[in-house]
Length: 103
Image 1 (cartoon, rainbow, N blue to C red):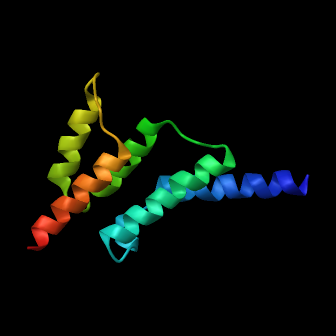
Image 2 (cartoon, one colour; image 1 turned 60 degrees about the vertical axis):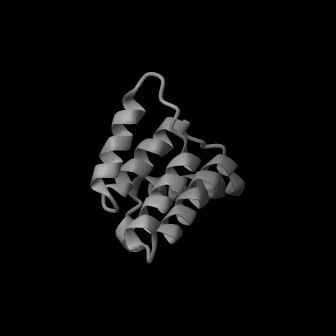
């Protein structure tokens, strides 16, 4: 019973953190992405893995603070029936874009 309670607490904590993640709470884009990846993995490890599309929606929502135009463009792509967006692709693209904007 204690194991079940502890597992539920971990699920609740990870899911709550994923749903309320805020880019402003991180020092860098890299830190944010690493924490987002950590939460995705933690949820999977607890058996509470969300559909990939849910992670994409949450990631794009958080990225509105980083680059609103990019986030909106990606949301349009995500709505397409034949969307091939992946989290890894989004991580790479926003990182590359941020690096280009720093130059």
